[in-house]
Image (cartoon, rainbow, N blue to C red):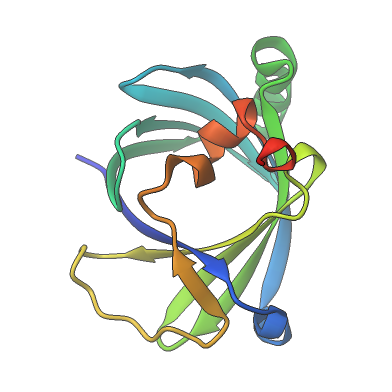
Length: 156
């Protein structure tokens, strides 16, 4: 069974930008979401995936991801996702033996920047760069699926 162990953090400053190894534009749309699972399609550069993720809180969730043709992904976004899409730039920042994924959101979520770190096990230790701020792994507002219906620009 596939499992994703991911921690999410806000950023305390922009010092991470000088360590970016590469960046990629992403568009993802949600075809379905329920209390049990979200189903999304994602395009990142020339690649595309279909993804199923359990809708549970916390750092560990079930996730299944399958590569699909980019043309199919574009059609799925147009046919099935309508307004349930978000755009972001993902920056990859290698630090302390791990690669941090910094998501800089656009559109209705502009201004939100979140650092994610995927781990092998929940108890894995990692270096925490000084630009990493408050952990928000258990706050559903920061889940991409929640940002679709409650975008950052509308938070009070």
